[in-house]
Amino acid sequence: MNKKKYFIIIIGIFIYVFIMLDQGRVPIEEIVTINGIGYDIEKKGEDIIEYSVPINTNVYKASGKQANLLFNEQGQNLGEVTQKRQEKMDKKFVQGQERVVFVSQDYARYGLKTLIDDRFRNPRTNDMAYMVVCKGKAEDYLKYKKKGYSNSSEYIGGLVESYGNYSFFSNNYKLIDAYVRIGAEGRSLVLPYIEITQEGIEITGVAIFNGDKMVEVVDIQKGKILNLLKNDDVHGILTLQKSPKEFIDFDAKTGKRKVKCYKQGNKYSFIIDLTFTGTITNNEMYANMLKDINKKKEFEKDMEKDMEKQCVDFIKIMQSDYKMDCITLGREAAAKYGRQKNIDWNKVVSNADIKVNVVVNADLQGRGDY
Image 1 (cartoon, rainbow, N blue to C red):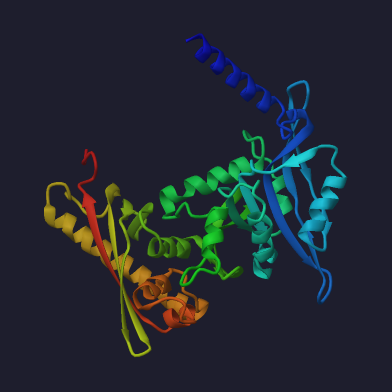
Image 2 (tube, rainbow, N blue to C red):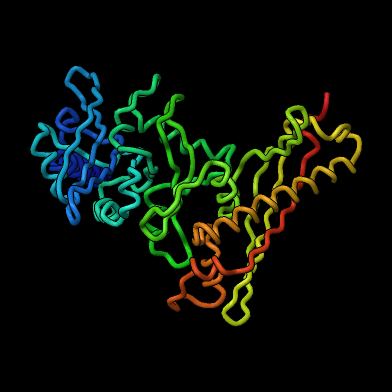
């Protein structure tokens, strides 16, 4: 019994010594942690590109206080930027705590390949950080001060995370989502698009990518329709309105999107089935809905027609103007008819027949009328 006790004590000592001798452990006062990182780009000539990578950091002092500082450096490649930045910092900077990756519009149009390589090959980066495309320079958003927040990344990370509660935005805007969507057959990347307005930083649209390059920015309304056509289990508010005094709000959630794909020769056809389930939050159009089941059915049919029209209108713009498969129909077709056949799914979907069916199931006004 005593031998077993001594054995446990010896093992405990070995573990303690191993931890204390860990060469990677340093006092927090000797490092800075990154809470947000930006990627800017500027063309200096026909074939000359200058990269700029601003970082917003937390610096810890021996007194226990914390400072928030912005560092920025430029270079002809991302490796040079990192090296030049560290040459001017008196502490080692540590990645892995960043909440948001800010990508300027110019960088997004040039292509995310260098950014993805820089982040993906570094095991210390945070794959779960949100990505956003910003109008203007990424540095301006990292400098932004929001009352009640220690840094802009904390605020914008929360903004992106909670925005889907009312606009059918998904939660698939993280760095790891970009890894798996860029280059994947039949899939496309979309990211929140933000601006600094008079009201502050706002999500004003959705950035659409073809491969790693941004090709289009759509407004919030089109972005809402794009997201509910593209994603499963998203939540938002739908409204029918005839006049300022006649409207009805439907707090809805989509179910699992169902897509049927057919092929005749080289022509593809798709049928998208969407289901919305939720409660009516404001009703100034359909009187006595709680008592009259026909009024409920009338609302559901009207909402179904309205949503089908909005979806079809967006698909027509997607096919004629964007010429992109923004809603990942190519993925469904590839799964049915075979992958890696060198098919341009953007071209296929842009020339396909696409039909949308909508079913609305409304709860009888939640708590009811009063």
